[in-house]
Amino acid sequence: MNAEIGYWIGEQYWRNGYATEAVKQLVALAFNQLGINRIYVDIFEYNVASMRVLEKIGFEKEAIIKLSVIKEGRIFNEYIYSIMNI
Image 1 (cartoon, helix red, strand yellow):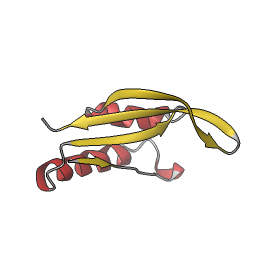
Image 2 (cartoon, helix red, strand yellow):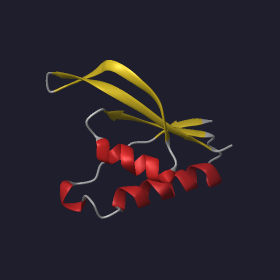
Image 3 (tube, one colour):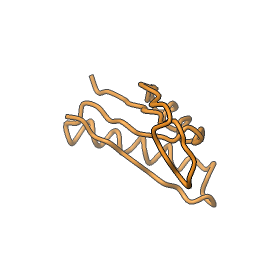
Image 4 (cartoon, helix red, strand yellow):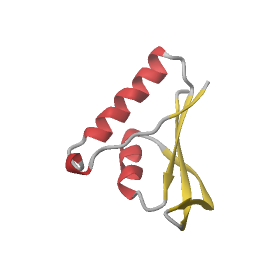
């Protein structure tokens, strides 16, 4: 089974490890209790901090979808990260 996750951390809480810990616990719950085999996340190219959160937990970059997202009138690449419970 496949699942997508998303998260948002208010700027005043950045750089405290909250996102890393929350995603780590969510992944453990999904794999150990929900029977999920693969979790993926879509990230805008400029969100390097979020990419780092995922990489620390073991997510790998699967793909870059070129010029696929429009936000506030600008076009960005979309990065796909995933982790598998094999």
